[in-house]
Image 1 (cartoon, one colour):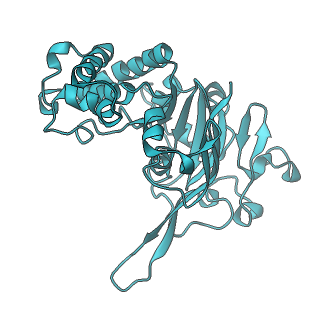
Image 2: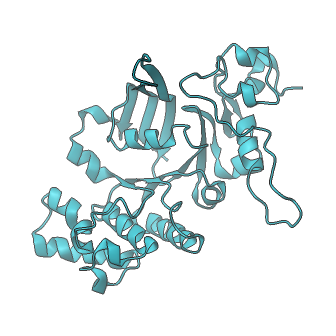
Length: 324
């Protein structure tokens, strides 16, 4: 596989005010991300709410600029790409199928909008292609002139997927695409996404807090914490043998259907750390059962352990292979 998108040292900071008379503080929502997105893969990005997943998605889509770092698509810096060219190659599917569709537009018009913006064909051709894509995502042509308010949540998300794919993009950024849907509908949308990936040769960046969904769909997983990637590995490796203590805690938090087990105890506490006041050293050290002095003093670099990479001092050869 060849890298389709390269993300190198990407940062995104926001200036945040905590009150009328308080001075503004800097929030590092994305803090030094390095990723290579391979053609044809499904890269899952997971982490707790507030870890920077959605901010990273918006940077990859070109919706907000990075404060520092570089993103390249097939070797071309995003800053040098025309917005229309980028939109033709990278498309989003957002979380909320209710808020992402214009309630005053008919379904066919919504799906055909990217074609109209890019001047591809006349109105008849645009409508034909829109209806063809609607049928491909499982919606009958008779719904083409309906409004979003006349559709169910699952149907609306299918419209959003059709709109994303009508331009035949290379990369689709899926930001929590099933979290607003009923559980019974989620699996249908996931299976549809997998079918479309095979049919159109798509590359997915799939952002979710639902580990069960990521395990089902991802080929590789990046785990984020406080704006950083702390573990990166093939999906099977992440779920079979997580290296980073945070990844281990996330997997321990998954509910089990086994009777009598009750709620899992992750030992992480209830509070996510304040991103405006991150701890020194490893950001995870206040919640980590294995933390040592070095964890409070120095940000860990990535260390390789077989097919996985973990940003944890436990895997730094200077300090030994594992914490004792």
